Length: 447
Image (cartoon, rainbow, N blue to C red; front, side, top):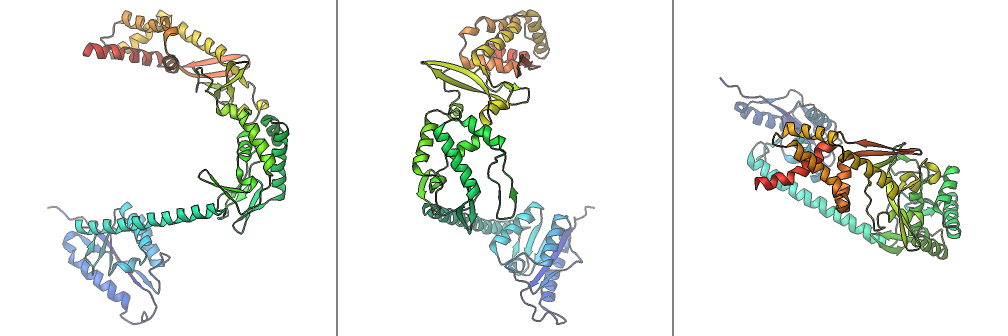
């Protein structure tokens, strides 16, 4: 004989005022009795009322800061409750936002919700439909509220009002307004003046790091301390590009006069912007890869310290010179790394020659073919070896993207040292390359 699973029911009651609670049979008792009777009527469905009572006497329904409701939610999280039964919905909460939070929590722990006087029961399809309608309206209200907040922020930004967030180096927030920090402002002015006179980002960053200068340290409105980090080229570039220093409030690419006072004069700002546009090292790094030639080893080169090398280029006398540059050199300065940059053509030639040497070795290729052949019995060894060797034969005719695909299939990582390089090959690189190469042929045969 099949047994009905028990449904553990918790009864929650609430009264906004303490008036009448000292009576022998008060409002909380009346609510509890009505709920108990309803649970008893569902006995055939396995409903069982928990002995614990969750009564909040003298607490408003406009907040969830109530002892009994907190205890109820803790029991929900502990899996001690299957269904919550109330006399009316507003006993649980009068706030739509709080009600939505509660329903989301109930849904997370598979807990249903019943109001005995309002035919509201999420154990039924109609109850769930009603709940979804309520949640849809709640979602609409949240989105509408979000739009109002965004509109207010946009309007405030246009008026130059500070709207929160981390202030820029050189400023503090006092009574929700940007106020110059004398010590930091002097540092920012020094950066701008030095770069205007001698536009060398590396020299400035090297000196600032030697002096222990860091990015902005600040304390959030919630009291969380955010410590600044040792200054980098990227941080200095952001400082030079931030119009807040000339009294401008920026919002979504638009500039508006700010409420705060600028700490950099317009002439000095314009000089720095001109130097940035003329091609500082930072700009060149950002333009890396636009030199017109492919970077076959992009994403494969690393220093012994694990720092990546990124493609870069420079142009002298109408001739383009490509290289791979250590990212530490870009962020901090050339003194921060053992190997700053490598001529692209030279290292690509070395790696490509070593790779082509593998493709010219019948013994190595035959071993890879036999491994693939164990999974694909129809693969003929001689044909497969010839297919791989043909890659070397037509290498010069391949498009740069095709060459890069072959390289990345075989090479996992290249470590750059002062005295040379170490190439780490993919263990299954040849197998993958062979499968990729044979796939088009097999597709044609199947057709």
